[in-house]
Structures are given as C-alpha cells and as structure tokens.
Image 1 (cartoon, rainbow, N blue to C red):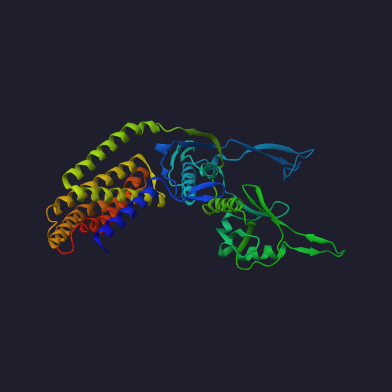
Image 2 (cartoon, rainbow, N blue to C red; image 1 turned 30 degrees about the vertical axis):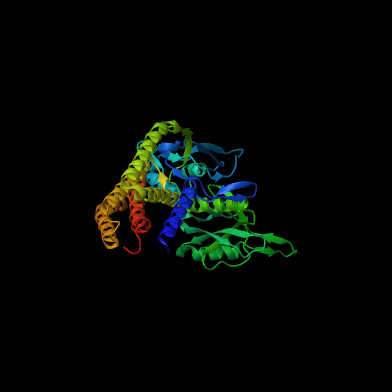
Length: 449
C-alpha cells in the first residue's frame, strides 16, 4: 500500500475509534437512539452508596396449646398460648453471626455485586452493608435480609424436604416454544434425597375415588414460608431433579423479570439459609462527598497540560510529532472502550490508573520519537532504532504489567480497579505502539531509502 494511503487509512481508523469512544455508537431503537457501548461503571466513592443495616429480629410467634399441653394450630377454648422468639437464645452466638456474614457475602458475590462492604458487630449480630446505588441495590437488600429457608410441605404443613435435601438450583432457558422463551428452575436434590423425591412424586398425585371424583394430593413449595408453588405430580421423578417453570414470553421485559426472579431464587438457595432471622433496621442512600464540579478544575488543568505537551511534540518533531499525537489519541480511545466492555468498576484509584497509563504512553511516544529522529534517510537504521526503543520500553513496562496482574487479584475494589486498568493500559500500550504507531512512523519513509 502507498505510504500516503497507509497514513490516511490509519488516521481515519483512529478518528472513527475516537468518535465511538468519546461520543458513542448510536443506533435507532424504536423511538429512541441507543448507545451500543456499555455505560461506564463507577465505584461507590464517586456515585454514592446505599447503606443497609440489618439486626437480629426480636419478633415472636404465638404458639397455641390444647388443655393437655399439646401444640395445636389455633387457639383452643381450654388451651393456653405463649410468645416464642423467632430467634432462641442458644442460636445467638458469635459463630452464627460470622456464618451469617459469610452467607451474605457469598450471595452478593453470586449475584454479581462487584462492590460492597460488610461490617459485623460480633457482640449483637448487627450487620451493615454498603452497596453501590444501581438497578441491583434493592435485590441485594433482599439477599441480605432473607433467610433462604426452603421447604416442600404436605397439605397439613408437614415438611417433606428442606434445604438439607437440596444440592443446587439451576436456571435454564428453552427457546423451542413458538410462543416465546421459557424460563425454568431445576431443583437438584442430593443423592440421599433422590428416593425421597421419587416417593413424593408417586404419592402426591391426582386420582379418582370410588364415586368418580378427582382427588388431588398436593404439596407446597415454599421459600421463607411464602408459597412458590402448589402442585401434584403427573409423573414419577426418579432422577432427583424437579423442574419448575416460571413462565413463557416473547416480551423482553417480561422475560427479564422471569430471569431475574429465577436467578435471585437460585442465589438465595444455593448458599444455604441464614441460621438467624434478621430484619432490616435501616435502608438509606448516602451521597458521595465528591461532586462532578470537583473534577472540573483538575480536568481543565490536565487538558491544558496535554495541549501543551501536544504542541511541544509538533514543534520538536514536526510531522512525526503530529502522527504521534494521532496515535496517542487512538490509544486513549481504545483503552476507554476496553474499560467499558470489560465492565471495570472505576474508582478514584482507577482514574489514577487511567492517568498513569496516559503518562506512560506519552513517555514511550517521546522516547520512540527521540530514538528515530534524524534517521529518516536510512530505512534500516530507522527500523532498528524504533525496534530498539520499543524493546527498551517493554523491559520497563513488563514489571508494571506484572504488578497490575497481581493487583487484579486484590480483594479490595480500589486496588483492584487501579491494578486492572494498569494491566489493560500497559498491555494495549505495548501492542498499539508495536503495530499502529510503528506503521504510522515508518510510512513517512520513502520506499527507496
């Protein structure tokens, strides 16, 4: 390809990349324009957060006894009653409080809540959870306070199966239906409960009595004493898997609600029930101390510094400096797109990661320009200088890349955000300058050199 065409093609590619990154990629979606790029995900230190405080419930249940002291379902004329705490004294222990914290953390992780902070008062079990304010916040609050008690009961309220019999809950989809997509949950029971489920499926069925009337023996599937389903069985279940359909729809909004309900139920049950009953004591939004206006002056200053740095490149390196600026803008555009598509949570530390990546790329660019300056008349020397400068900078960037990888495994989100952005920033930097910037600079050399 002609060197002029190369420069034009790459420049147009970078312009397109920059427009997509900085402005967005919009398409018509019914009456509105929709941006195909995911939104940036900001951390709680930038957007504010929800504080949910739960405390050990002091509620009681009324228990009724007949005249002989036997427990009954309702008040008896000659009977007695007493108020029994939902949490007995013997379960209010430090070990159980810690178990609750562990279960809540597992639920939040499985629900895809990427940022949260859990504080536990080990003396009284009070737990405070800080959550990002988004579409998942209300769901997260329910996951924190719900017991997660699962039962299958007969018509008299006798428990036939419970959490101890359950292995896991799986969420599935079926697109075979002509009326839309079906969403269902598969309750997978452990191997010790397969025969019990088989027996239940053969017992609680529809039958016909001697008078020809249909008689149904039903079971109730309950979660936290709320009935999810009442049913009798049409066939024997011998594999230990009980499928429950939540519904079928071709409407995306309805389908999303089915999927959300199924996913939340799976998260709740797959991590086991809380050993203690909790109640929400506080649920409030805490505004971030950082305002958008707080970034205005630093942004103006950084923009001015970047403009001066660009002008310096053009003055000192002329055409190569201009091409370097084009390459630099393309690098930033690509980095920001990667941050969006990988759903990285941007904290204040993450912003510093972006700034550090931008500074490192500028230093690399200046180093390359300095190395190839005055070698435009010798293509071999030009390539050698470029490759040598890249190799030197890669040796410098490699330890930073390793540090970024290590920080990616940090449990604390601010450090994770910084490390992950540094990792992508350095990786993209090396690849971008090894190919795109190299092609731009080498295209300025005449082929007969």
